[in-house]
Length: 115
Length: 112
Image (cartoon, rainbow over all chains, first blue to last red; front, side, top):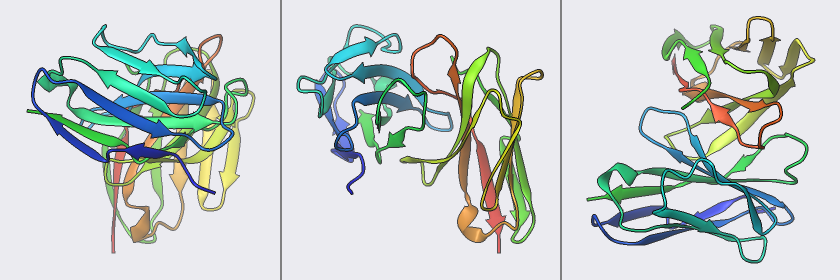
């Protein structure tokens, strides 16, 4: 079956603009995660959804970042007033359920560049 | 901040040799997972070891876990050029959310 997909694969935007990054999880996976990875570093957790609700948003760096998952499937990560420091690869992952502490399935990521 | 520390940061070996990567972490965990990443994009899950397990095998992969030392190692035997990638350990902490806490990774290069 299809894996996790993310669009766009690359996004270049100017400082101060608004961007939306989309994630389509594996069908039937109730848990969805967003991570951010800077060059040469490991991914860092941003937010975790169980169904439609954000169960843990402790990794969002500030209030410019927001994510939604209105129907419990597709999720959108929204970044307002982008800054150059937001440049990174944004990774989405899903898992069958959030309760078994199991493996996560990652998408290919969106590379965001803020100029 | 990231919990894991990986060692070495970069490793270059000849094809056919074994590659060993180490990971240390700070807090008690539910499990530890190893992921592989090619070209800085999506990660692929390799193996999961639970806190009550000491060793696990999957094909050419062998993972050990020492909870008393808060460390893990990943051994890739009989390495191949296609094993060239970055390898990350990630922990799921006890009484925490489901999030993975990643180390900084080891960049492995297999020379033909």
